[in-house]
Structures are given as C-alpha cells and as structure tokens.
Amino acid sequence: MGKRKVNIITMGCSKNLVDSEVLLSQLEHGSFEVTHDSNDTGFDVVIINTCGFIQDAKQESIDTILQYADAKKQGAIGQLFVMGCLSERYKADLRKEIPEVDRYFGKFDLKALTNELKVTYNPEYIYERKITTPSHFAYLKVSEGCNRSCAFCAIPMMTGKHCSRPLEDLVKETRYLAKRGVKEILLIAQDLSYYGIDLYGKTRLAELITTISEIDGIEWVRLHYLYPTKFPYEILPIIRENPKVCKYIDLPLQHYSNPMLKRMLRHVTSEEIDNLLTRIKNEVPGIALRTTMLVGYPGEADADIDILKEFISRVKFDRLGVFPYSHEDGTYAAKKYTDDVPEEVKQQRVDAIMGLQQQISAELNSKKVGKLFKVIIDRKEGGYFVGRTESDSSEVDGEVLIKSEGELKTGQFYQARITEANDYDLFGVVETDD
Image (tube, rainbow, N blue to C red; front, side):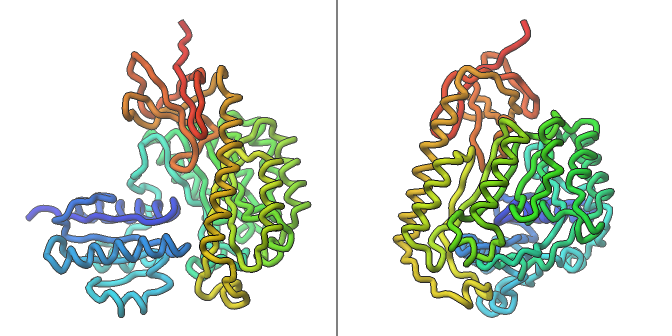
C-alpha cells in the first residue's frame, strides 16, 4: 500500500505559513506524501489553514473551504480538515454552516490534528520544518499572540497574549535552516518589539538578531512587524553596524492623525511617531522603512486623511500598504463605534493613499538608477532573473529584474547596477570583477 497523500492549503500571513510547514514536516515523518498549495485533486487528505484577520481574508478562507467541501462531495478528495485562525474563532459556526468538513481544529491544535491522522506528534520536528518558500530564505516566527489590544484588531482573540519562544530554540531552528541552505532569515511576529519581555522580563530582540546573524550560512536577517510603542531602540546600532542585518524595518503605524490614533487605541501620538522615525533615520542612515495604514476607521473625516497624506508626503516611506477598515466581531471598535464611513469613501481613500505612494515610490526608485546594489536572486521569470535588494522583502515589496547573458543562480548574491526604474520595480545588470 502506497503512502497516503496530503495537501495543505495555506491562507493568510507568513505566520500561518510557518504553522503549515511544521505540520508538513510532522506528516512527512509520519509516512504521508506531503504537498503544499496544490490545485490538483486525488489527495487522501486536504487540510486548509485559514486566516481570520480581515473580512476579505475571511471570505477567501470560507470560499476555499466551500470549494474543497464540494470536491469532497464529488469524491475528488478524501478527508477534509480545517485549521487556523478562522477555525479557532468560528469553529461552532463553521461546523453548522459547512458540515462536509470532517473536523475543525483551532490554530494551536497541531497535536490533535496529527493524532487524528494517526501520526505521532514529535516536538523536534518543529525545528526541522519543511520549507515551502524558495530554499534560500525562510520565515522565523519568534512569538505568538499580542498584548497590545488595538481597537480594530481581532488577532489577540484568536492567538491570545504574547508568548515568546525561547531564544535558544530560535537559534537551534536557525542553525537547522542554515544547514538546509537558507541564507535570509525573516523574523516575524505579531509584535517583534515585545520579544522576550514575557520570558525574560526585558526585550531580547537585539541579542536574538546578533546571535542568529553569527550563524554560518546566514547572510541577511530581516525584521517584520515592530510596534511603534516602546520601540526597542537598542536594535538600531546593530542594524547600522552589522552587515548581515538588513537596513530594513517593517513598522505598521496604521494612522497619523491624533484623533484616529486615540480612537484606534494605538497608545502613540503623531509627535511620538515623528520622534521615532527621526531617531531611526538618524541612527541608521539609508534604512528602508515599510509601513501599513488603515483608512475608513469609524469617525475618520476628510481632515484626518489630509493629515495622513501630508505625513506620507513628508516622510516618503520606501514601502507602504493600505487597507480599508471593516468591523471585526468582538473588537472594541465593533462594540463602541458605528461603521460610519461609506464603503465607496473608504475605497476612494485607499486609492488616494496608494496613488500618493506610487508617486513617492517612483521618485525614490529613480534615484537608484546608476547605483550598485547587492541582490539575491529569487527566480527566473519571463526572460529576467528576478531578485531583491536588502530594501525589499519577499512578496510584499519591489523586485530587481536583471537581464543576463550568463546564467544567474537562484539563492546567490550578485552586485547589480540599476539601469532603469518604474513605479515599484528596478531593472539592472550584474557587474563582475573582470
């Protein structure tokens, strides 16, 4: 009898992806033939790892469950399981509405899920997870949960309070990843700024960054999702002086207008944001800053958007994303406020902010023409070798498209001279020593 075949479908963020990778490893060691994000049928088991963050993500997860529930009814797949954030939060509702699913599991039910599949859960396989990203980079999830309780955010209701992973565990996992050929580590958490406080009584993010950068084979360490309140300033000299730590910070600010920041329960003011950004830029010249904004929040007026646009125009973030607000069940905002900004107005504000950022991105990119950058090659596509500078994270930022007569190796670093730029991407050629 051949191995049972399982396909894991991952929805949502990179933190979910890490959970899927851990599960893939457990099942592979348990004699399953494992596949990730396949569109094929014929699997003995399909597991959907859902997202419950915002309305669009929730709907995408539900649509995917319905698609595979229909495939199960038609006999195209065997068992169907659902896990992750959406299932953690709405398990009872999902059971009632989509009973075709064999069983629903929460976000932290990996052991129960493996037991259901007659596989013995082994904690050691957490460190030996099956990488689904290109083999030269991997995400490292340093914690779960969040203690911040922003008014609009349902994540703490799904993931609980902040829970840091021990530093030695993260070092152990990074060593394993490096031995597998991973060169770029992307640190992820709901709130990197808080790392270590719950375990050690103080933040140990600076120590973590330094320690993993010293592991043989690791060439880039990248930081995602640092909360602006109680920002760990001790990391800035490390980013400035350590060549292996990317001069890049993902700092979700959500807004700049003080009335909005207060209503969002962000516990930071526009003046404090200005001081933070000034200090970061002064201490780390040339750092790339990425942020996200939330518009259409209850009570948001045109004046708040004007303040936000002025701020964005002044700061000129290297990367910026924006989302329209939607009520999330059980959050402070959903209980306290009426969702009073019309949907069409929300979309107009999203478009206005993204239009502004497009101009800023084009302006910043144009200044890179003629300059030399260290680039890692991610793939070959459409006649180009596609790579990234240290200012660009995978999937969410711009890319460098390189024409080369010779073959460039995926996962290798090259020096690329920028020859052309558009709104979001760069074009270049590799420079050699000869």
